[in-house]
Amino acid sequence: MMNRTQVSNIWLTDSDIWVELNDGRKGKESFADYARLSQATKEQRQNYVLSYFGIHWPDIDEDLSYEGFFA
Image 1: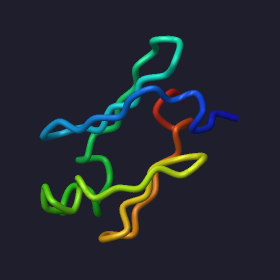
Image 2: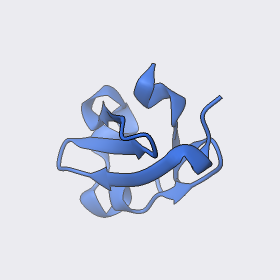
Image 3: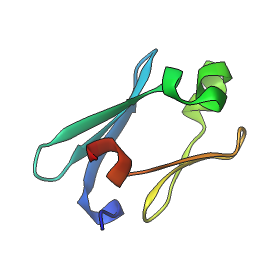
Image 4: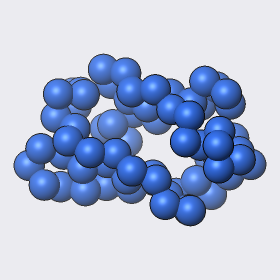
């Protein structure tokens, strides 16, 4: 199971969130694939918290697991 210790970088573009692992692999998820993220403001998207197993957006109550970026 993938966890925070394997993640080296997280960044946002206008349409996606990216996760890079320590081994150099990169994965992305499109905001358009998630209703809450697609309707969120830029400020709401930028307000995320990293947990041991994923990313949480408290303003919109959305969660994505790190594993999902590489499934």
